[in-house]
Structures are given as C-alpha cells and as structure tokens.
Image (tube, rainbow, N blue to C red):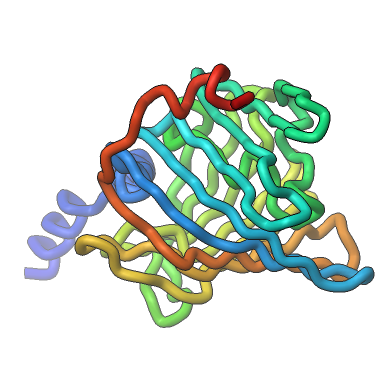
Amino acid sequence: MKRICLIIITLTALTAEEIINRMDAAETFSTSFSRGEILSTDRFGQKTSTFNAWARGAEESLIEFTSVAEKGQKVLRTKGEIYLFYPDAQELIRLQGAALRQSLLGSDISYEDMTGEKNTLAQYTATLEGQESVGGRLCHIITMVAKSRTVAYPVQKIWVDTETFMIWKAQYSTQNGRLLKEMEVLETMEVDGRILPSRTTVSDKLKKDSKTIMVLTEMQIDPPLDPSIFSLQNLTW
C-alpha cells in the first residue's frame, strides 16, 4: 500500500518547470490596470510615490507616476526593452544590462522588479529544492540560475504557493551567493477569483537601513485597453 501511495505521489508531483509555468500564468493577464503607492524608507527619511500601471500579456507594461514630485514620469516595457521618459527634460532613455537593477525613484525596487517579463524559463534554469511554510502557506522552494548575463539577477530563490502559485518570498543573489535583495508578501487581495499581492516589502541588501513597501490600492483584470498606450509614441505624449 505504501508503495502504491508513493507511486501516486511521484506521478502527481509537479516539476520545477511546471511550477514556474503556473506561477507565470498566475501573474499574467490579457490586460490589467492598477493603482498603487511606493513607500520608501532609508537613513534620510521617508518618501511616498503614487502610480497608475497598465499591462497587456507577459511582455508589455506601462507605469505612470502621479505623485507631485514625479508626475508624468513613465516606465515602458515593450518588445523586451525598458524605456524611461522624463517630462521636464522631454528625455527618453533605454535601459539595458546592469541599468535594469537601478533604483526606481530611490526605492529598493528596481526597474526590472517593477516591469519584469513573465517568461521565466526563457531566462532561468529551475531546480525544485523542497517545500516550506511561509506566512502559514505551504510553498514550493525553487532555485533559479540565469542562462545568460543579460538578466538583472544571476540567481533567484523563490517560495511559490502550492495552491495559488503566487510568490510569497524571494531572495536575489549574485552568482557567488552574495545576497542582493529580499522580497516578501505581507498582505493579499482577491480579484476575480485570483489571489494577488496587495502589500509587499522589498529590502536592498546593498543599502543600509533601507526598506520599501509597495501597496496596490486598486486592481482590475481584463479591462479594455488601447494597444497604442504601449508604444514609444504614446510614451512621449
């Protein structure tokens, strides 16, 4: 009987690749719209930035900041590239390589963190390390190693919910194991039957006394969107 149970468990167990695919699917929508705020704390004090964000599929996203100090600044990901637009200078910048890890508005969140594509297995090799409870939720533990040097983080260790496939916790490291950043979900929301992060903390381990909390105040799934909002022409309007 034990042998039969073991065979059934083995046959039904998910591979690391299957878990990653389900994770990507859980984070990807035909279209989405959200509002939120980024709360940054460091040795100089606190700062709050607000934003609106639109996304289509796994590869297109646009973030526009609405707080007074950053009003009109935009971050666009399209066709595998990230572009920044600064309205005061009417300047358009394309980010690549190490620049993807640069701080977004002085926070612990990078441009890659905020706009990353949902095609993980194209960029990483995944290994399933086991299971562990995070915040009372049973999670798969997966270590991912980058296939090339073009990604922002050479190594990622993630804790993925065994039921919802949402990431509850993540550690980002260099190839030689130096911890760069940690992320953990503090609160969730349910939108159209999906469980999504609503309050997330991010800590850059290379910055002293620094922490960022990202809060989603509104989330819409599959709203009608004009595809032109993800164009470079729209970015500079």
